[in-house]
Length: 274
Figure 1 (tube, rainbow, N blue to C red):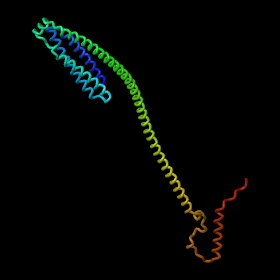
Figure 2: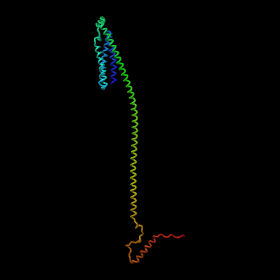
Figure 3: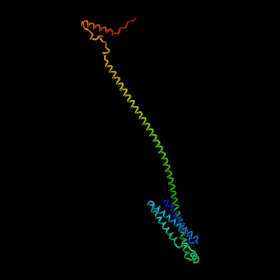
Figure 4: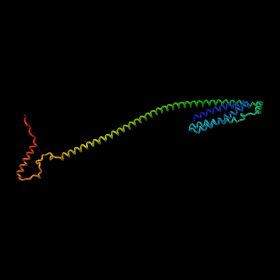
């Protein structure tokens, strides 16, 4: 906003310089040229008034320290504008009629000529003052332009740094996504390995349990058969069919049968060499 206010200030200086120049020329002009310059000066006053209104709007939107400084400058500009406008409205700068021109030509009023000379000197002083003001405004604008260029350069460096940081962030995000994909794949592999380990453990426990059951069944079967199934029976006939007629003879027969049975179970002795 300060730069815009300074731009308006430069325009105001240019307009007031033109107004001051026209006010110095009007008394020496004649007829149509005088009327044209008066109309042109009136237009310049209107433009200057608009510039002052724009400057007032800019001052209202400024922060407090700058607002006070610019408001004081604007007040000086308005006072100067009012002085120029008051002077422009004087009869000296009114549009002359033919009778006024004739009267002025033939009267040769020395007092009027003296006033014109004094006014010309005043106009020159004002022109010099406006020129100096325009030079100061130009210097301020150049300084502001230099600051703006420096700010633009710093902003360019900042944008470049932000671009580099953005690229780094994008690369980091790509790496994080790749790491996330690798972790997901590793998690699936670990889940599969855990499932297979559980399956192998179940199979191992089942196999051990089955072997234990088979071992117990084998022990049970061996124990159930016992030694009675392998020992030779002393008598082939059931006891219910044996009729005891003579106990002594029975005892002898039982002993003989036992001997025969034992003899049949003894393996034959090896024969000698032929």
